[in-house]
Image (cartoon, rainbow, N blue to C red):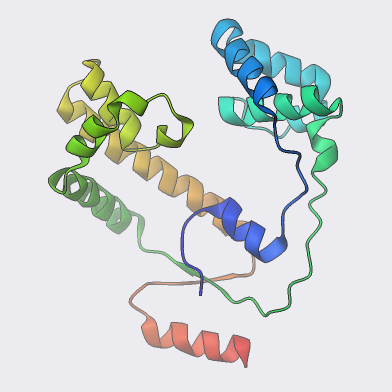
Length: 205
């Protein structure tokens, strides 16, 4: 049984992934420097010239996605889109996908309370311990990035909490939008345990 909310990892397990080349350190360092000096807008425009197909699909406000595509283009001399075959791999097992969802107001309430609970459980202290690593991509996530802005003195603690709640709700909506595109997912309220078990039995028998 696999659980979680990362859409790309779930697709990788169920469908397989494309054979995308690994970026060498020199290319990664060069593109990081260019992003800092030239800015995202210039990088997006370059991607449009090198790979118009992917430019038409990529989130142009996401520097990580834009830069990664450019890294592939520069390192291989080929468009990033040429490596994305989207071929579904054969799997030696049955797949039964179940989505758990609640009413939107209920989700918002639970998210807001969860953020407050994270603060009670030591999120601020954790962010302080990781503050010297705040520029790592792995820490550019909801929760840490807002707390780092608070520790930088750019926003108040109350504003950091509000932003974490708001950005978590936004991420939740993004997740649901992605998952709703997958017609193989059968949706249930988390409390409907009996219906979920019956669906699993029927799907995998």
